[in-house]
Amino acid sequence: MSAGYYELNGRKIPHDPEGFLENLDDWSEQMAEVIARAEGIELTPAHWEVINLVRDYYDTYGLAPNIHVLTKHMKKKLGPEKGKRQYLESLFPGPGSPAARLAKIAGLPKPTGCV
Image (cartoon, rainbow, N blue to C red; front, top):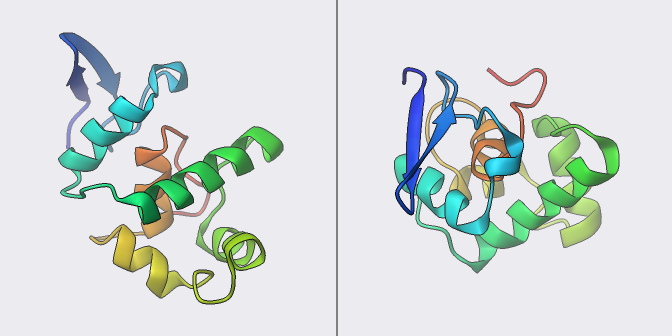
């Protein structure tokens, strides 16, 4: 993916070559839907539970968690059945880290250590 734009309500919202928003203030729930569609993901209540959790984490700690930190946090907040990489991979499938795809859809910077 090259640097470009997502389109939302007639506006062009710039993103970097990996699809992460250039301006985090451009994020909204509607924007998340646009990014998810570009990633081939249809958001369900299960997705939103994790999106809201990772956005709260970012608001608290000022960074998007990598996969290890994220799964530990999810286990603590959502229970052991959801605190697993496999659960994240089922929600955010594709190449690379599900933590990175989640952060992208949640309008956060790419987590450190994600490829």
